[in-house]
Image (tube, rainbow, N blue to C red):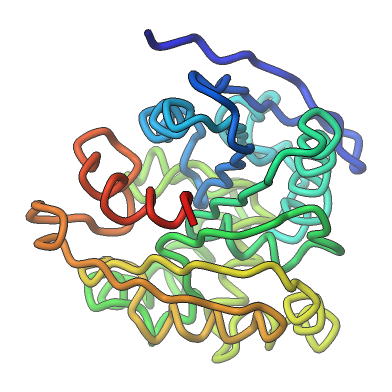
Length: 285
């Protein structure tokens, strides 16, 4: 039986609240999993995967960053968050809540795209026992997979600077490009994506050291047909985690009986074979 998740509000150090949901383990508890979402991907889109994890015996926590989904308070143009704020405030608060509520359970951080980035940007990831990164790589645009690289230059050099300063936010819904995003998020992301060393190159050694300080082991799951992240992007990001042991698993659609996986969508129930064949052995390890 599918159980309706519990919704909770979590206060952040910045003064705003974020909304998280708890999916209760549906068999003997084996641990707790945090699903940290990709940029602009609302937490409800991970529900299928969260229910599967709960079936495997995990307590599961999903959440939205400030300005996204259930953590959007008013119009997105009023959000003062950027990606570093998502790490320093939202992710820190979420991790603290989970450690307190589920004390003593094995804690797995499952980061989709930027959901892995924020773990390296946080002041401390203490309490995270292991990490599964999915479709996570740097955003340096000339390294992106071909489908994204063909349009990224227009996004970063044309569309974003032409719209965001005037509107006060990125109108992704109207443009049918990603989704609406806070001004701080999209402008900071743009600056990073125009740098060869992405965020650590743009921000400096202090951020590079934060990534290096994260020591939890990482299982990196990368898809051969990811339409955003090339393997060069994937390897560059994980290269920042110099303190972590990293095991990379490369998955093609054919490996799991699919025609396509891409960057977004692996968390939908049609990818059950992927979860059983790739995720389950990692979670059982």
